[in-house]
Length: 337
Ligand code: GDP
Ligand code: MN
Picture 1 (cartoon, helix red, strand yellow):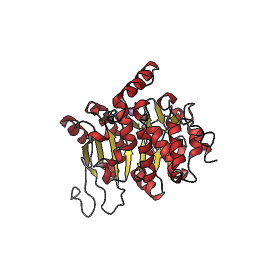
Picture 2 (cartoon, helix red, strand yellow):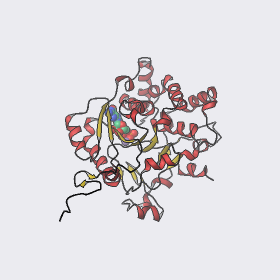
Picture 3 (cartoon, protein in one colour):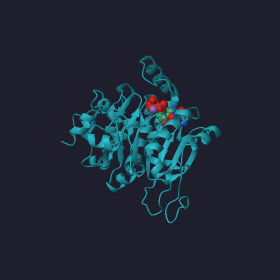
Picture 4 (spheres, helix red, strand yellow):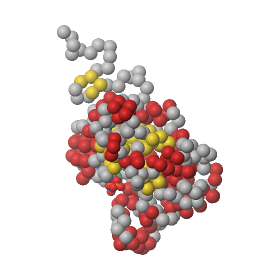
């Protein structure tokens, strides 16, 4: 008798999950997804998995962003699989589209060459808009601006283990700014002039380069050349105050004014990774070994029996990308030796 009446505790129900206790400490964080209306089915699959593996216990708010207004269908169907708060935001035009000052003839020539060379997304302007937005604008969106932390999620990714602690609070309490699960090489053809641009920036602004940084993860010769290693940015748990810092903002503006996002095809992954590896201490970058994560075609699966068992992981640790020939885990590991 009385079992359905909650007394003196958080109320729970099958539809809302367990409400977070008002006394529990929480981070100022959002789970963030950039998506198109046509991504609705795959977006829902990702949301569903992260809710099941993590967020139904924590109920962090979701934020969805799009350069076009989200359809009623997208909003209704996505909201239906989220137990906590959710917001849908429109990206301001000036944060998304190719700026006026970019030389369109030069940009077209750059795209044509990449199509000939069979570079993935080589001919796509929208992909370039997306990479530039993710590099320098998402954390300034009016909805996202209110938060310090974000967990980036994409449509059609998979989460293979239970996360029973709060990774945002872990980051905050351990003075971390950037978290990743997969690291690999970038295609050189997409960023031929990026490293030279970075070197010019750091030569002109040496004060931003932090002592004890992760340079030796990205460079095999003390910074002369880039070894193409980067953190795969479709998964990120990171501190937006770091992106909003003077160092990163100046760096982004410097890169942006070269037009390299359009003349070449600079990805947000190398741009973020280089920023994190130069403007943070290496200890501030965190490898989330315990988060089983998959984005086609690669999976990070915790290999240590403790993590794998504790997280009830469904992935095969033998197939983890970490020590694949294309992985940069070796470069990451060597900076700790
Ligand atoms: P890939 O992972 O590099 O193959 O690129 P994706 O196609 O997965 O795109 C990366 C992220 O940006 C995903 O969250 C996509 O949903 C999103 N995205 C890509 N292009 C666009 C676009 O033109 N508009 C919007 N709104 N989102 C996009
Ligand atoms: Mn993707």
